[in-house]
Image (tube, one colour):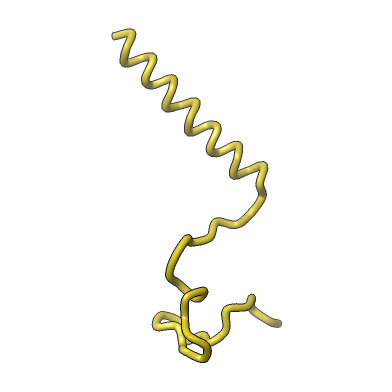
Length: 58
């Protein structure tokens, strides 16, 4: 039983550390591959049709 409690505590601390790191960084989550960053110049996105990788302009 002590092994279960120890592993549970280790996993809970790990999740808490990841959550705190995401909050402190204050950076939006971004994909590591694929998506708009890997489109050829002028190629439209297959999902939304956008052709630019920049942010939305108002």
